[in-house]
Amino acid sequence: MSSKLLKIRQILFAGVSYTLFGLGALVVGIFFRLMSVVTFISPPKKQRMIRWCIHKGCLCFIRIMRFFRLIRYEFDVDSMHSAKPGHIVVANHPSLIDVVLLLAVNEQMCCFVKGAIWDNFFTGAVVRQAGFIPNNSELILPMAAAKLEAGENILIFPEGTRTKDDNVLRFKRGAANMAVAVDAPIMPVMIECFPRALKKGDKWYDIPEGGPAFTLRSGELLELDNCIDRSLPRPKQYRHLTAFLENYYNKQLSTSKPAMPEQLNTH
Amino acid sequence: MNAEKQEIFTQVRDILVDLFELEPADIVPEARLSEDLDIDSIDAVDMLVDLKKTINVDISPSQFKQVRTIQDVVDVFAELSAKA
Image (cartoon, each protein chain N blue to C red):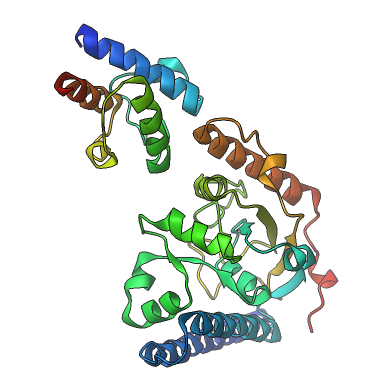
């Protein structure tokens, strides 16, 4: 097939994938919008149901994307699944679909959501019942603390936005603030995307031929006592932990060679 | 800046240097907390706790909301200690 035909096919498949994603989200949204008035199912039960639906939906989406040869992926996240609960999942953020990949490997994970999603009639019903946390709330820390203490795991991208073209990680202090305030351990997940695709500003249909290869790799659970001096004043701990994590990621991402596409199975 | 404000300024500067690992030279009255000194709202709460220990006045986080610069911090504390 000529490269132009391949490109057209790819755009078509990408369009189909994202449309299915949108439709799936709409169905889940309408279903749980209606569920929100159902009172005989307890909120914790509803939360488990919604998170399970989101997890399966994301898994389905990445399988469709892989089937269409739009992405490849490989997961090495056993240490995350066996880590004790109540940790903060910290990940770098190279692409648009990082959160989808992470939700696809975690059945019950808590996320932060934008205010616009929280306040929307449909998405709001879903994320509220899913027990997610609005990122514009003043009570963000106490809410996160309660969830971590109850044994939930919370995902945060310390970069706050997708990694720039220069591949330099610049962490904001939010993740460290939360970890120090709550005294929660950190589960580091390294996400690699090779070649880089779906960056901020990239078009959703602008996908390298054969699809970018994603690898998700989780490290050992990081206890704060082993990362920073906990006797220091808290503002120093926030800064030291942020620097520690930035350094950790730069080391982890530079030592591992990016997986070559042919090493990733495509089935 | 009068003598009292100068004293408060010195205390504020010492606390900032100590808490946030800043250079004393960067802490000037017109320095903005968030843009110039990278002090966010969570830092501000910790800073307030420390400032209250040193400068013995009662201040609530809401009174601290409008504070943007080092000068604002000094002014708020000077005003409160004058009332006290």
